[in-house]
Image (tube, rainbow, N blue to C red; front, side, top):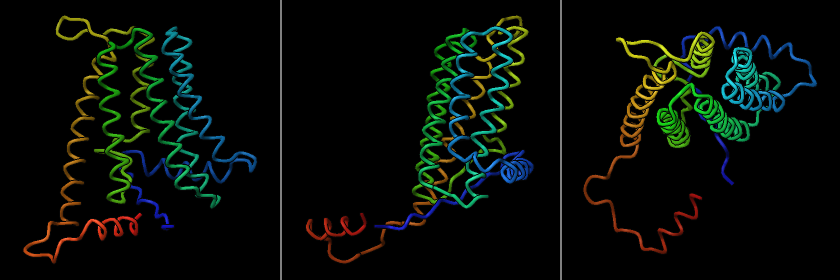
Length: 241
């Protein structure tokens, strides 16, 4: 059985420094009966509740969405920090469960926005597609490169929550904005910008990781010895696995 090596975490977002200090401060003061699984559950339920709030769409429900986004930050950001502070790390379990909940949670959020009439179905689907492309790229790079990139261009999950919360507050005034004499849904405008940013992030990250991996594992130059037989190749694969 191979030894598991946790990937190096790279977090360079605007708020990462102050956020890290805040999370450690909170983790050191949480009651002992609260553990990381409780926080993970809180994060998942908060995304479900926020999605339902966007679907309902009343001012009270939208204010609740802002509170639930804050609760999601508390649970999603603090669960790993709490595990590390208490030395109860479960790197494979935590990485897997967090990413499954993130994938489902973003579906709840944007499903609620579309069902509530705050975003066009096509742009909602386009955002999810672009988001999942970036998520897949991050997961592949974590395995192949050994680097878990948690932000792009100084924007990470916390900054995205703040932008979403700001848009939610604006929804309480109205779901449309005027641009050049035309009216558009606020989250359609934000969705177009987000889709563009996510696609560029995917292309840049994928190209950079492909280049790094090609340099790390270049094609051999000239003769590299006799080719393996199928039996030898099969044995080599068994050893690696």
